[in-house]
Image (cartoon, rainbow, N blue to C red; front, side, top):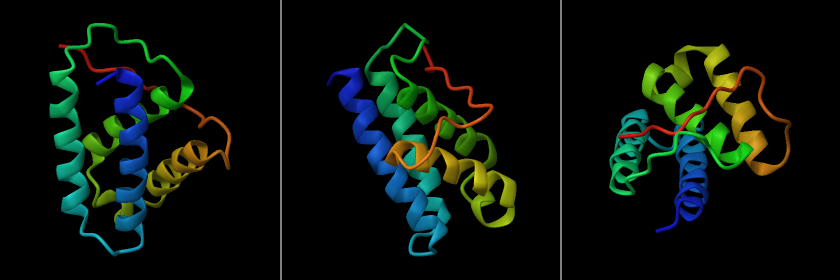
Length: 109
């Protein structure tokens, strides 16, 4: 699988998972597991370049790292975090601009 395909697919899936957790139609543990599985799948690609190839990819990695750090339950308990993540989702959909303070790097082996 090409890196760009992987990122585009995961952006779509991540967006769906996050929106479902925010709307309480999916338990936050499912999103946490999805993030963990995504990281495992990424390692199978054996990527050695940490620089994202696009702004969308950079925002994707920012979201993944933030979700890993705070956990999906923070979407309910931390309004600032929820707002930050929603800004990223707006960027993915083309409805918003590049998020302020977005730092997203590819994890490498």
